[in-house]
Amino acid sequence: MNHEVIVTCAVTGAGDTVGRHPAIPVTPAEIAEAAIEAAKAGATVAHIHVRDPETGKGARDVALYREVVERLREAGSDVIVNLTAGMGGDWVPGEDDVRAGGPGTDMVGPEERLAHVIELRPEICSLDCGSLNFDETVYISTPAYLREMARRIQELGVKPELEVFELGHLRFANQLVAEGLIDAPPLYQICLGIPWGAPAETRTMMAMRDMLPEGAIWAGFGISRMQMPMVAQAVLLDGNVRVGLEDNLYLDRGVFASNGDLVARAVEIISRMGARVLSPDEGREKLGLAKRA
Amino acid sequence: MNRDVIITCAVTGGADTVGKHPAIPVTPAEIAAAAIEAARAGAAVAHIHVRDPETGLTSRDPALFREVVARLRDAGTDLIVNLTTGGGARWLPGEDDPAVGHPSSALAPPEERVVHIEELLPEICSLDCATFNFGDQVFMNTPAHLRVMARRIRDCGVKPELEVFDAGHVRLARQLVDEGLVAGRPLFQICLGIPWGAPADTRSMATLCDLLPEDAIWAGFGISRMEMPMVAQAVLLGGNVRVGLEDNLYLERGVFASNGALVERAVEIVERMGARVLAPAEARAVLGLAPRAA
Image 1 (cartoon, each protein chain N blue to C red):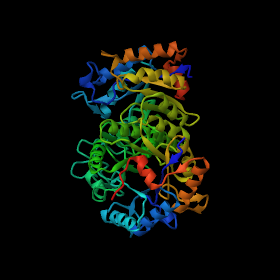
Image 2: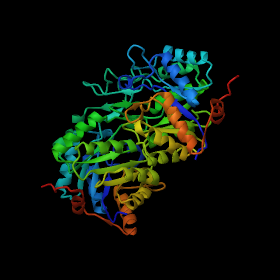
Image 3: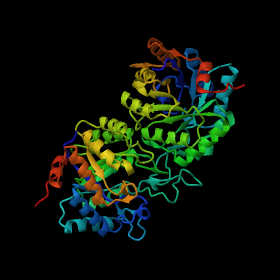
Image 4: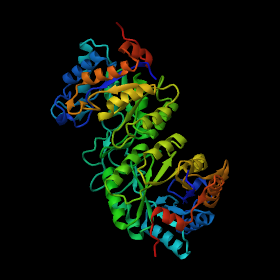
C-alpha cells in the first residue's frame, strides 16, 4: 500500500461533456479556477486540457494553454501543472476513402502535438503510449510518433506521464524507457474503463501494475462510477490516484460533482485508509521535479 | 484445465516472413498442402491467410482463397477451415498530411474485407476486434467497421473467431456479442506477444480469459518462443490452442519448424498433460458447427 499519495485532478478533459454537466470548465479562466479549487481541496497535480471557449469542444490552441498557465502563475498557485499532449491524434475513417480521415478527425504530427509543451514547459506533460478505439473514434499514436515525442519531451526537461490504456501500451512505454527516451524515475498513469480500453477493475490494474519497471512511480484511475473505487484500489496496490471531471461527472448517483468535491472525496478515502496526501512540494520531491523559478 | 483440446494451425499468416524461413507456404497449392500436413499431425482447424504467389507478400485476393479452399475440398480433408479477415486493416499516417493514410496503408472498406467469406462460406473466419499499434503500423478495426463485418459474417452463417490482443479488445468483442452481431456461443482467440499488444505470459492470458463472457469458447497463443509455453498455459486455463508458422518460425533455437512439426509438438504437450486432442468432427460439436456430410 502507498502511504504517501499524490492526488492528480483532471479538471476538464476534452470529452463532449459540456451539455451533460452544468459546470464543465471551458474558458481558460474557468479551467485555471478549477485547478485552484482542486489544489485547495488537496490535489497535488492538475492535469489540464483546454477547450474552445465558443464551442466548449476540446482544443489544442497554444494561446489557450498559455492563458491557463499564466492565470495559475498570477494566482500564486503551487499546484504542479500537467498539460495534456494527447490532442491531435483523433481519427475517423472517411466515408468515400477509408484511408483519409473524415469528419471528427484531428490528426497532426508529433511536433505539432507538442507545440504548447515546447512553448510553456510545464512540469509534467502526458504522453499516450499507444493507439486504440477510443469509443467510436480511433486514437492514434504510432511507435514512430511516440519515439519522436518522447525524445522532444526529454530535450525540453519536461517529465512525461506515460498514459497507458492497455497492457500492450504499457509494454511499449517500457520499451521507451528501455531505449533511454524517458528519464528516471518513469511516471505512469494507468487509465482504465475508457471504451475500448482495459476495464476498470482490480484484475486489470494489478496486471498492469505488475508489468511496471522497477523504480517506476505510477497512478491509476477508473472512469465514471469506478472513479472512487479505483482510488482505493490504486492506493492499495502502491499507486497514486487521479480524479476530476475529465473522468467522471457525478459525486453520487444523480448528483453532479465539482472538481473540488471529487478531490475532497478522494482525500477522505485516502486518509481513512491510513495514508496521507502529499502537498505539491512533497509531490515534486517524490517525482524528482525541480521547482520552476 | 481443458481436457478436450482443439488445435488450430495458423499455417502461413500475412507477415513478411518469406525471407526469414526456407519454406513459408506461399502459393495456394503450398498453403493447402500445409493445412493438410497440419491436419495429419493432429490439427482440427487450419487458420488461413493467402499470399501473392509472385512476391510472397500478404494478399486478400478472393481468387487465391478460392483456390486454397477448392484444393482442400478436392483433397477430401475433414479439417475445419478458418479464413482470415485481417487483410485490409493496416494504416500509417501520411508524411505530408498525417490525417491521410500513407500510400503503403492497406486499409479497405469493411464490405471488401469479407467478400471472400461471403463467397466461400468457410466454417470459421477470424474477426480482429481491435485497433492497436501492430509493430510500427496501426492495425485499424474501428467499432463501426467491425459492426459491418460482424453483421455480414453473421448473415452468411459463418462462425466468427473473435481475435483479441489486449484487455479492451475483449470488451469491444463482448459489445458486438451484446448487440446480437455474433450468433451462437462466442468463440475467442487470445493473441499474445505481438508488439504492441499484451505480452505472452501467464498474467495476461489469465487476465484476458477472466474477462471473457461465461459461455465463451476460447483458444490462446503466444508468438515466437512463447508459442509452446502458451500451449500449456491455455490448456491449464481451460482454453484451446493455436500453433503454426504464422506465429513462430522455429521448432527449437536455430531449428526451422514446419507446420506439421509444430502441431506434433503441441499434441505431445497436450497429451503429456493428460488432455486429449479433438478430431475435426469432435471439434465441430464443441464449436456448434454443423456436422459434415460423410
